[in-house]
Length: 407
Image (tube, rainbow, N blue to C red; front, side, top):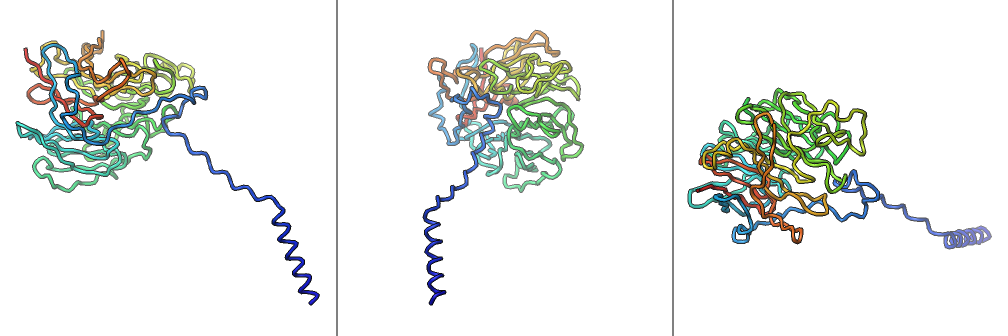
């Protein structure tokens, strides 16, 4: 009995102590990581409302596309060539006229068939991680996502062909930021692939901020350029065969800089500056370095602040007037890291084969309404058809426009 009484008293004392003790504080939840696009933002910019513009991932009917707002030089005309393909970006054309279109956010690759009077589209592959890169050569379509490379042999005549998975051969780095790609086969038959910086501004590491080329099967990889932050388009000059490419400037250094670049690569092994040097010789604020721009290949032309310069194309057709021969067309998708939007257009850059005396001129405008800082579409890539007309993809409206000229 005595022992039972002591046990009861001890139990009551323990309960009283527990009830009188303050409750243990719950462990603080870890702060959510900042989005990748905020990296490089200064503390005094923390209140900024600037943020990347969300893409429209639902189909826009052709009847809802404000074609009447688009402006072109006299004699040129735009028509909706195809619509209903959300996120349409880079284009590649097969020998029989079928056009393949990569996307980024929606994860699809489309095929458009032109039967003369109308175009129809279908989804070739879906649920990939940002398959922006498409290229076509020797009867095969190559699709490159961030973590996968697929080859569709004979797809233009055999729509149901199963892809060959070539991922292992290309040894793709894993980071996603700026790793969506534009790809193309060069005059040498090799496949050219960019790997952007995995950040807004950082030391990118050995695998990033570069352009590589591969044999078509993924063998023979070479790094041919470094210091390239985020190129989303390149083309070879019809005469010199030099590679020209756009490159996006970093964010959070102000409304007016650093501007995007248009670069010319006359040999392999050049350095184009990232992360220490931008545009026409602007040292980086966050990564200072003595002689930051000393051994950097500077651009042929800057393309405007935060313009998101994308696809480029040297015009070689005969439909447009003679002064457009070998002129470079550049699609500028448009800014987000700027208090007043900039770009949202297609421009031409006239220069000689060496890049001397470049002149930028507007070509296709009207996507941006400066009166209220709003936009309708975002032009991204260009593809020349055999008749000399020019296709322009619009990522925001999921459309492709055909540009023709008549006197």
